[in-house]
Length: 335
Image 1 (tube, rainbow, N blue to C red):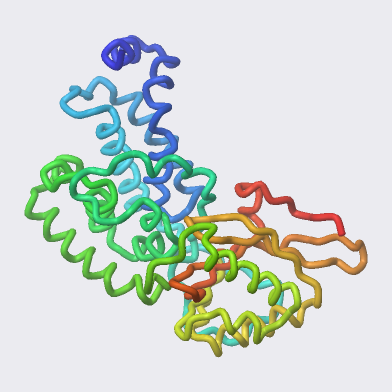
Image 2 (spheres, one colour):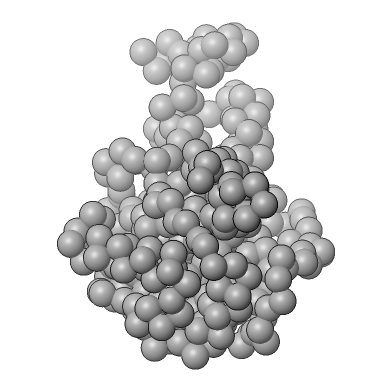
């Protein structure tokens, strides 16, 4: 059947090409997201990948599977994106909606966006190759994706291909038109960088299982504390080295004291908040709504994603309203 589809594609049958690549579209989207850290950029890269594949189908010699070939095309498209644009370093700094306390540090990955769990459901069933080191749920976490963004492009590609997708060094060398020695060297440097950075980004211990009693208790306690504007109640759930970031704002708050100052500033803006639970990057997330006293309407102020380790919150990442629709969350709620 695949040979027949490929023959039709080469004859210019666009519907056959759609049938050929559709089974891989969602996992290729996740691949582009891991590379680029932004759903918007990943969607653009995926469209360019499919265009590249359509135009380059004549070079597909069927020495590998269609899936492997598409991953090669997507990888090289993402590398082109990283080489061809410096827009992330030219991004205008947005203005916060309220006065922020002095941050602990400057945030580096300001283009980071969350990924809805609903879009990765079922993808974990795709068996990784023999060289995979990261589980699917670990490799979609905000801590992992953030750490990947801090790697040079070639190291980023090698780490994802080898330790997430599980391709062998010989295959990765072919993907990247390089040598096995170069792949091995890049992987060694990438692994060292990830091991150093992941704990700082909140990946200190495995998170509780989704919908487990520990996770449900954390969600319930945080919801009650936040909706009561209880700073102490929020802080009691945090790890000592908790990290709070607010992409696209280039700020970081490091440690319980710094996060407590930030949360106190948030709660001075109003006395009525409402949280709507969702999931992003394999962990709990919340649409955050503020009551407008004039209209008696709950207005969204953004999305907050938790990074959990054992029974503590090790990172909070707050995103603006622009990503709410991806999670099926409205901009307003009735009182």
